[in-house]
Image (cartoon, rainbow, N blue to C red):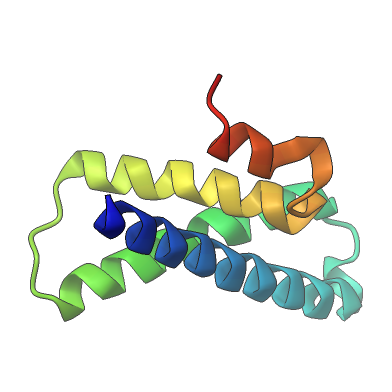
Amino acid sequence: MEQIIVNMTLVIGIVGVLAFAVSVITQVFKGVSGLKKIPTDILVFVLSIGLTVTAFVAYMDYIHQTIIWYMILAAILAGLLVAFVAMYGWESGGIVEKILCSE
């Protein structure tokens, strides 16, 4: 049980760091004149999934672990969570309650 709590803490921290990185990169991209025309939500989705999958592949390479197809699918789903947090924050829609309280 203690290991689950430690792992969930790490996952929430990683999601937070990735969401922060996506927010910063989005703000920089929106400051560039040619990229102002791209809708912000689409840019956040693309950046979130791209950064999450890239971070996952880099981590798996670092620990010399084989990547299986469903791991990439899980990283894409995690990217959607990162996009949600980057767009709406932790408190929007009660995401913390939905994750922690599965009634």
